[in-house]
Image (cartoon, rainbow, N blue to C red; front, side, top):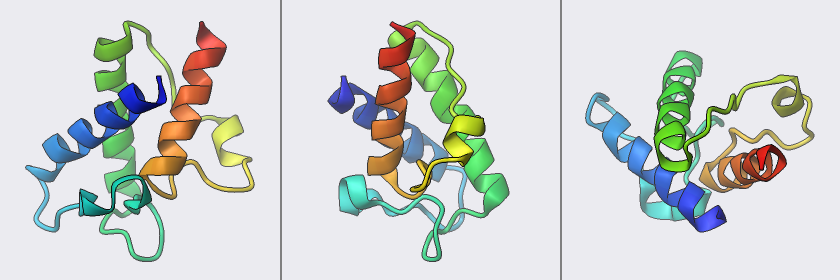
Amino acid sequence: MNDKVYKCIIKTIEEFNEELDKKVDISKGRETELFSGNSVLDSLGLVNLIVAIEENLAEEFDTNITITSEKAMSRRVSPFLNVGTLTDYITEILKEES
């Protein structure tokens, strides 16, 4: 499941990049920064990306999940740090849902 979530996130970022002047560089794979000091996304950009990821996940997994929650915000390591942390977090949510 983790690989399928990862591919969905990367696909969403590729689609999202089409709208951005400054692109999210996905060449680092799981280490691609999403919301950190070196990220091209600001907080509004991250919110828009998260909404797009949730929509693509709904299509891919036939389930509606909310990625942003108190659980996400209270974690010691933010799930929004990079693609890897987000992939692992979403996989965890999907396992809890099933």
